Amino acid sequence: MNSLRSSLRPLLAAGLVLLAAADARAVRRTEDPLALVPADAATVAVMKWSELRQTPLGAKVFRDLDHLSGDDDAARFLEETGLTPREDIDTVIVAMTPGTKGSGDSGIVVFEGRFDLARIGKALESRSATLKTSAAGEYYLLRDKGGEPGAVALVNKGLLVCGNEAAVVATLARRESGGDGGLTSGQGLGRHLSRIDRDASAWALVDVARFPPARRSEGGEGEPSRALVSAMKSVSFVTLEATVKSDGVAFAATGLSSDAESRDLLEDALRGVLAMWRLAVQDKAPELVSVIRRFRIDNDSDGVSIRGTLPQGFLESLSEKRRASN
Image (cartoon, rainbow, N blue to C red):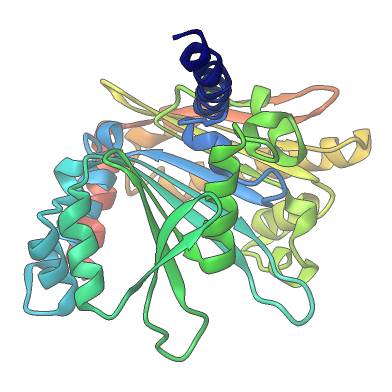
């Protein structure tokens, strides 16, 4: 009996070590979708569909998704997977990084919601998607239709990740490592997370300096708009927020610049755009003049911000005009 006990002790010790290692890996893994976004992304946008669907703009987006009920492959895919975007998707996170010479832009899209993984996997396989395995998990490599093939990771019943193969593999690795190198690690774009309200219905962080000058030089018509575009060239970073309220959508946008003169130019340009907008609507929609007058512009040591609320009626009229034009 003593001999049996002696032989079992090393096995029990090894088993305890393996259990401890498994527990460590489980604790290390993160389920925070923001931690999956690479810190070196140049822009990240978060849209909480569960809140935005209450707005006219959100309603229009979901109406457009409902149009997929035709006889195309997208409609068949939704039918096969049992996925109803209007009801099953709660949050969408999009992160992009502009490409360098010799490489195109890369990015990921993270979906939070409720997903039938078995049905989605079967639908992907029926479209010649290949199930592959990385060190951090499985993903589907989609059939190449002439460009770089996309990939989809069915992370769990509440989380899907889409992007090119390298981006999806890297996202799975960040999840397993507890978010190392991700947005919540305080690196890169994540250094500016404290500047935005993460409870907003939609928000975005944009590292303007990371985008090629050609993409930042396009502007609208009119002198105030051109002045605003010119002033934005000195802005290094932009934050955007929108929050659904009972009377409309509250928004805020901030352009960061370390140069005081550049901030003054940006403030002047924004005031010019608001003045032009008031003149444009005073005859067609005079009720908007007082709304625009309530927009607030602040200039501090970091940047220039504009805040205001777009009334529900105004958003509904925009949606109606767009529907009529289509």
